[in-house]
Structures are given as C-alpha cells and as structure tokens.
Image (cartoon, rainbow over all chains, first blue to last red; front, side):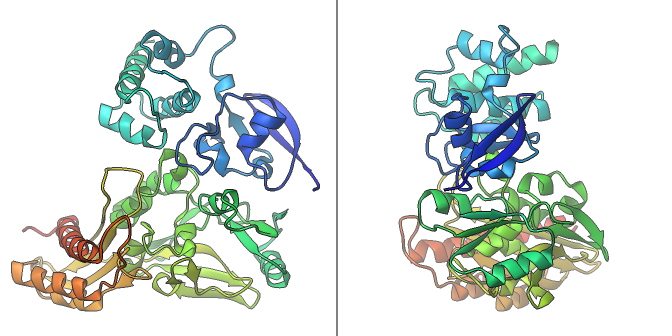
Length: 158
Length: 287
C-alpha cells in the first residue's frame, strides 16, 4: 500500500513522516517516530492512554488518522518536561505515588495539564469529570486526583 | 483506502456519488475510526470535509445559529451565545464521551451515525433544528428529525452529506433541557433519554411544547401527544401525568444488557418529567 507524506509540528519540532491512510496518529507516533510515551490501551477512544494535544485540544491519538495531522501542532508527553526539569504534574505524580503500573500515566498527565491550562483551580469533581476518559486500573484514582490538586496549587503559586 | 480532502462541497458530492465500494465521511472520527479499528467497516474511500468553508464555524443567522458540521462538542460548549439560547442542545452534545472525545465529536456526526441513543439528537429535534445537506443534486434543508431512519441508518442518499445544522431563533419565555439515564455518572451510552422544549406566555402558561425521547425506539422520536398534554398548563400534576403517559405509549424499546423494555419505558417518562421542569425554569416559569 502507498504511503502519504505528512508535515506536522510535534513538540515544537517540524516533523515529516510517511504513513498509510488508515494508520492512526498513535501508530505514527509509536511505530514511525519512536515516541512511545502515548500508549495503546483500548484503541477505541475509551481509555485515554494515548492522549495527546492536537492544535491545542486534548484528543485520543488512536481516534485521529495520521494523514489528518497535515499542518497540525501536536504535543505529546515527551514534550512535557523541559530538559531535565519535570513539569510540576510529573514531579508531584512521582512524589505522591499517583501511579502504579504507569500505562495510563502519560495520558493522564497530558489530560491533567490541558485541564489546568483551562481551569487552574478546579474542584475535585471537575478533575474527576475531566479525567473520566482516562482509565486507571491500579490506583483507584484518589491519589491521581490529589496529585493533580497538589500540582495545581503549586502552579497557581508559581 | 483512499483519503481525500476535496476542494469544494461540489467536488465532494461528485466524488462520493461516483465512488464504488464503501465510502465514509470523516468529521470527528469518533465513530468512523472506531469502526475502522474494529474492522466493522473497511472503507475504500475516506472523505475529509473539515477544512471546507463554514465547516468549523458557528455563525449567527436570522436570530438563530448555523453550526458547521465539523464544530466539536468542546467548541460548541465554549460558545456562550448558543449555550444561552439552546442550553438543552448544548448539554446533550456535551454528554457525549470524554474530554478527549469532546475535542473531536460533532453533533452532525452523532446525527448521521444513527444511534437511537445519540445524546445530541433529542434536543436538536425539540429545537426543530434543520440539517443543511449538500449532494450531487445541490443543496437541501432537512429537519433533523427526518435524518435518522433506524439504528445505524440515515435518510441521506449516495453522495449526500451534512454541512451544517441550523438552530432557529428561540422565542421569548422559552427554554429547553435534556436528560439521560446511565448507570454511572459519565462515559456511558444512554439507557433512555428525553429532551423538552417549552414556550410560555407572560403568566407562565405553556403555549408550545415539544418532547423527544431517545434509546427507546429504533430512532429518536418526537412525541407530539406528549407536547400537546402540556399546552395550556403550568405543569400541574395532571398535565405532567398525561405527558408521561404519552411518552410511555410512544416507547418501543428493546431489552438488552443496558436495560429492559419496562425499565427504559418507565425511565423515559421520568426523564421527560424532570426535563420539562428544568425547561420550565429556564423559560422563566415559576412553579
């Protein structure tokens, strides 16, 4: 099958890749570009493990075609830390052990960052609803919600 | 699979009309790409229309709003004027899926997918929304209620597609609301649902009422008798009871893992009652 050239910006870098028309953005990121932070959980937009930002919006990269991203700005978990400095969300997730197996963590971090940019001071209920599309089978969510709130407080103070 | 971004609606219509095999139109992709992944559908042609004029715009028109077919749920929810005019429509759209899905899913896609449980559809029906359909024979306007014809089916012909949905102007003293039942609070498919749109007079008496129900029949249904039952009332118990009876009579659901016939019928009536009370309050009525 023929591949199609696509030009995008990923984490600020102009990136060109070739992909098949039925290939998802998730498959492009993982298999063609080596960006394996986004995970495939369900592949059908239910679990959020593949969450990335596309043109400033939180999306499941499994529900975006690679060819659709021509000219788009993509941000993935790989772009979240600045060099060796973790984003406050990343650091607090580690400090407060808001993860166990870690499969859902990249998606949750990307989603939580999107929430805090929109709403820097969310209620616990708002955090839970916003993250309803990010499934975690380990933590029971409480530590995740607390970590998001700790990071949010820190970011508001910063 | 060919992936095409046509240069115009006319080119898209011609392309789709002349296509052999299976064609799909890509809007938000939240249904189409799931079907693709599950190998339920293996399209030969995928037509992406999101870049065409007006597809991603919300435009005031004759006192109402024209919503481009590729406007996402998140974009609609951030539009204060549409939300103020048709809160029931917006709350229906916003119930679809997660934050991630909201970034992509569209009300036009939800309509064309033809799910009896589509959360965007009942309140569009009670708003008397009109879909603008482009096709090989030109442009036509079709009431939203006439688009779905059964589970997974719609009334569009080969080569036709929706380019926008028009939400008409809302009269004074009017309000709408949408409610669904799901066994948890988020990320689920409606077991039953109801939308209500009411117009009141100065004294709070209902002068016009439209009620639509979802997930309780092969398509979303507009229940005219239920609306008639509320006209002339201030939502007193007798009027509500008559409305609920009409809603229950219009239900013809199936029993499946999400709910039985009896449960769906009962909850559709309860939701219609609760949505009517919310719509009444939004219309400025005092109970």
